Image 1 (cartoon, rainbow, N blue to C red):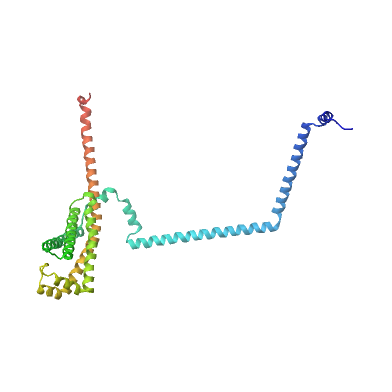
Image 2 (spheres, rainbow, N blue to C red; image 1 turned 90 degrees about the horizontal axis):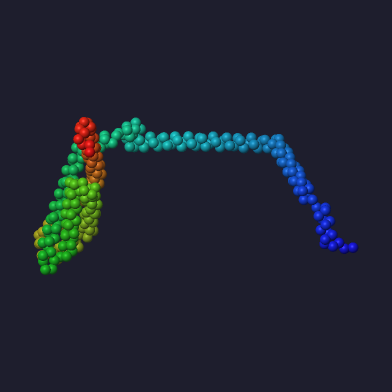
Length: 311
């Protein structure tokens, strides 16, 4: 006999109890969790109590201790190397650690006073720089004048004209700019930096002329002979130049050395003068502030005693 749907629903409704079913599920879950935790505790106890595991733990602790000792030894070695390097650096600079500490303790006022004073060596450097600029200006002026004179012909020697005018203008302009940078402090004495840079170019030009004359002097003398009428030369003067050629080499070499010295001296001189300018500005500002503070201290009691200034 087949069961209808209504009869099946009434039967399952009577036999199904959701509260009891949920209580049975919770009890089964608690039993499974308690069994799992007990098994894990037993396994951990067995693992800890086994002698092989104890031996491995002891070995790992020993390896960790050795590793720490090795790291400490390397750290001490690095510190010793750093100390030795600092000592060597101090010896190389000629300053000990005490001297460095004393220099660090120097106040800004003392540093400004020290930078504002120029010694005897600086005066000699100033005289040398002035002399070099005067020599360069005279050479540049002579080259410009000679280039202008040989340019007046109808068919001038253009190579000589361009060389003399360009070289003379460079020498004259850099001498003037260097003198301006030396005498005034405008634009952070950029004239000295420009003069130092041009000195390297001029020294290179002198060396190029020496090498060209040593490599092929006949080409130069052939050019002079071919254009002697427009260069204010004759056979006797060209022969004299050929005879004094070793002296000309020495003269150009000396001028190249002078320009090289000018390059290094002007760089150092510019840094010194920049420190000097900064020290002078700092001293003047400090004195001005001190005068203002003294004026305030002197006028404050007068203003307090005289009530007429109050509106």
